[in-house]
Length: 275
Image (tube, rainbow, N blue to C red; front, top):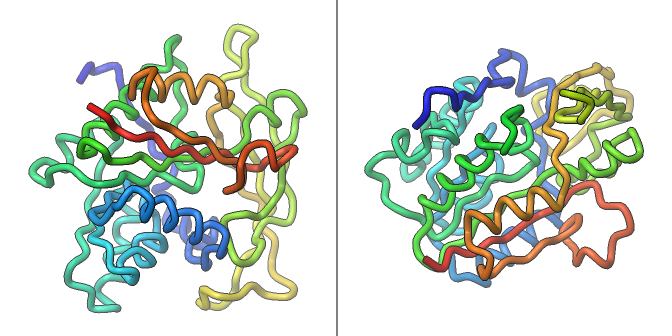
């Protein structure tokens, strides 16, 4: 891999689990959509390539899937391993792996029926290369981890709204409870063109360690994180370039057909590997 392709990690803060509420229970809409896609394509062996605290991996394990989890954040990996130990789960492999070196980092694990990279994780990758080489390499590596006929489930926040309207769509679709009181954004430009946006979240903090509830009056903490200002059309075209122009794929908006949602908060993609 070229030495110029590097990935900085924004998630090594010791308090990252607390600040981003990544332990909270997922929404029924998200769980239903994910399980429907995996069932549709007869998936059993899953690689979650941005596992975070392991919430989605745990759900899949409980549903009988064989799951390997990876994340580039050692803090996230450590937390997921702690959960594994507490729950005494033996058949759960949790590894530190970088999207740009995924094949090498997960050497010897073979290929999977599905690769998951959800919760808008991918656009935390800030890529200032003219041709988005970091994204292209990441997508190639995701594809390389799939069996023929396997699927990539990937998503991202609606950055078109950020670029065109100057503010993210604040709509809770991923979690059972809403942990974001407000959102603001500031575009970052390179040569006059937006390449990233600093998104500031007013996060409602959970004072207890419960995963299924939020306080009625929680402490609000402002958290800012840069996200790639990549348009939906460009994201789609990169995936089609990697998977092939004639590949089978579907795009969703907040887990519905795109035409059903006027201004979605997120887009979800299912790309199938044919060769």
